[in-house]
Image (cartoon, rainbow, N blue to C red):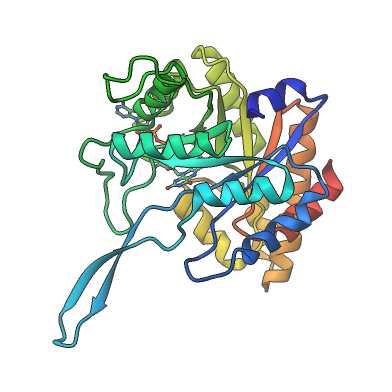
Amino acid sequence: MKVTDHLKNAKGTIFSFEVLPSLKGRDIQDLYDGIEPLIEFDPSFINVTYHREEYIYKKLNNGLHEKIAARKRPGTVSICAAIKNKYRVDTVPHLICGGFSRDETEIALIDMQYLGMDNVLALRGDPVKGEGTFVPDRDGHANASTLVKQISEMNHGRYLDDEIVEGIPTDFCIGVAGYPEKHFEAQNLKTDLKFLKEKVDAGADYIVTQLFFDNNKYFEYVEACRKAGITVPIIPGLKPITTLKHITFLPKTFHIDIPEALADELEKCKNNQQVMEVGIEWGIQQTKELIKAGAPCIHFYTMGKSEAVKRIMKAAF
Ligand code: FAD
C-alpha cells in the first residue's frame, strides 16, 4: 500500500521508521534484530536507505596506494522485499541520483515494480565521502526533481526508450526529502523551498523531513511550505540522541541545531547511559507535542538501534 493511502486511511498519527542495510559480509539477522522490537507498534511502513560507493585506499605491495570504489551497505531493494515478506509491512526503498545513470535508475525502478513495491523515496544523495560537491553520473540526475520526473514519467507508462509505445505504467507513490533547518547547500530557506516545490510539481506525493530537535522549526517549516504553495503531507523525522558521540556527530553530519535546553541537559551527562535517558525523554516530549499538533506520521531514524525508539513509542503513542 502507498504511504499516502496509509496517511489517508489513518485515524490519527501513524508510525514509521528507517533502517540501514547491514554492512557487507554481515547477516541480515542484524537488520531484523533492529526491526523486531518495533513491530509490536504496528509500523505503517519501513524505509531502507541507499548507500552509494565510497572510495577507500588499499595499500599495495610496492608501498603505493590504490583507490578502490566499495559499497559497504548494498541490497536496499532486496532488503525491502525481504522485510515485506517477513513482516507483512510496506517498505520504502530509497533511490538516489548519485552513481546512477538514467538507464540504471529505470532498471532499479523496474526491479521494484516486479517485487510489488508501491513506494520509493527519491533523493539526490550526498557527495561521495571526502569530496566537497555532488557530481552526477554521466547521464545521471543532478538533483532529485529530475529523478522524481523520471519516476513520474514511468507512472504514465513513458520509458526512456521511445520505441516502447504502450509501456506498462508503474504506480509508485513518491516521497522526497525536506529540511526544516534548510539544506546545507541552499543559499537560503526561500530558494530551498523553491526547489522543494519543483520536486512536488514534478510528481512527489509527500515529504519526509530531515531530523530536528526543535518542534518549532518543523511547525514554522510546514507553515512556510504551505505559503509557498506546497500542499502535500509533511512527515516529521526524529532521531533520539543516545550517545556522547551524537552530540557532535549529529549537528556536523546533518547540519541541524541542538536547542539550548537540550544541550544544557546533555552537558551534565557523563556517559552514554545518561545521554540516552536525556535523549529518550526529549524524544517523548517531541513526539507527544507533534501528535497533539496533528502531525500525519512520526518517522524515526533508527540507524539500526531500536531501544530508544521503542521506549519513546511506549510512552508517547
Ligand atoms: P535535492 O532536492 O536535489 O536538493 C539538493 C540541493 O540542491 C539543495 O540545496 C537544493 O536547494 C538544491 N537544488 C535542488 N534542485 C536544484 C536545481 N534545480 N538547481 C539548483 N539547486 C537545486 N542520502 C543517501 O545517500 N541515501 C539515503 O538513503 C538517504 N536518505 C535520506 C532520507 C531523508 C528523509 C533525508 C532528509 C535525507 C536522506 N539522504 C540520504 C540525504 C540526502 O541525499 C542529502 O541530504 C542530499 O544532500 C540532498 O538530497 P535531496 O534529495 O534533498 O536533494
